[in-house]
Length: 182
Image (cartoon, rainbow, N blue to C red; front, top):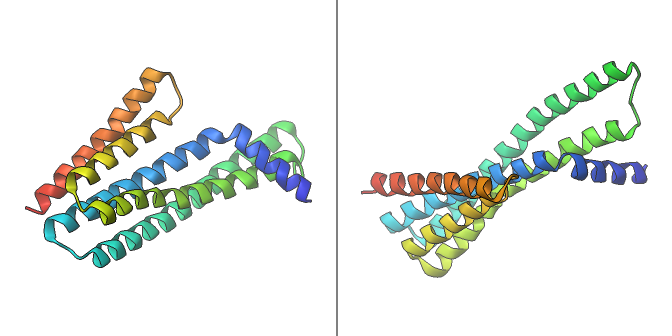
């Protein structure tokens, strides 16, 4: 049984890595923007470090739970539908096969990946705790967001474009947050 489970995880990591990468990027993106919004507001309003940390960790936890559950619901539905379609095409049950276990492993890994990735926003919180400097916080945010964009598949040019698009979302978030706090 353990051997089948390990094979299922290998299968999922080999054939479903684009889904897992996408969930990693999406969740990280959410966690970083959430943290940046809270930290920029905290700096603008002189919120205490303790309150900023509590608000950020609570927000990231809520986003992580939301991300995990969304992934669980969506991936379970999609993967089970794909699995059932494969069974129909093959005109036989695939229960107990690598496809059966691989489907379940992908659902599990998607949920864990999307649920844990918002915690990448903790990098910004640590930067805030260390520096309390708006420029440093926004600079680190932009670097991390751009690097997230580079982790998408495609040519180098496509990766740079993705990085710039994600970076623009960070700039928009920072600008709107600053405007809201003035």
